[in-house]
Every structure is written in C-alpha cells, then in structure tokens.
Image (cartoon, rainbow, N blue to C red; front, side, top):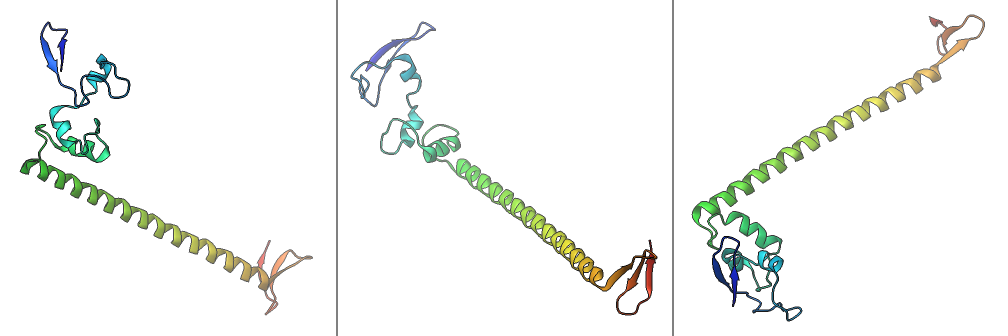
Length: 146
C-alpha cells in the first residue's frame, strides 16, 4: 500500500494488485502507471489477474454500465439488442452485396450478348467496295448504304 497526495489536497491509499513495486523492475509505480491501473470493476473482469483487460474483457467492460463487475438484466438486454442490431446490419450489407453482384452479372451478360451478335452479324455481311454498301452474303441484297 502506498499513500498518495492528490492535486485537490486529499490523500489516499493505493493498493496495487502487483504489489507495492512494479513487478518488472522492483521500483515503485510512477504516476503514469498509477493512472493505468485497473478500476474495481475492471479488476473483476480481468481474467487471470494480468493487470490489463484483453479485447473480450474490454467488450465486457463496455457493457458493465454501473461498473460493479457484474451484468444486470438491463445490461444483458443492451448486449442482446446490440448483437441483434449488428446482425441486422450484416444482413442488409449482405443483401446489398448480392444485389450489386446480380446487377453486375446481368450487365456482363448484356455486354457478352452484344459482342456475340456483332461477331455473328459481321460474318454474314460484306462491304461492296465500289458502292460502299453493306451486302448480305446469303441473299446478295443491299442492307445499308454508307
């Protein structure tokens, strides 16, 4: 336990879950280390007493609104509502993605169809060099004048 004098003139006792000195160097904790110590609620959420919260523990801390280290019915309800909201957002994004993919596929088919029809028509038509007319190979009739 360490006695600390705060800027507002009050003093208090600090209890460090790592002991009175830093576990890494054997020296007393500096002010920066004291600021990053875990609160009471965070200590309750710190699985394995690591001295910090991992991602899952930080998520749990986010939903522990009253800071008691336990989830009330209201806090659990908020978790479920957030999960449901995220599920709906994912569903909407997935539907939009499949819609865009479907439209892209239809457009690709249209371009392919145009290319094929152009290829087929260009094989069945010749240009009469002397008159600059398009002439059908099959019938010999003039299709268009240029």
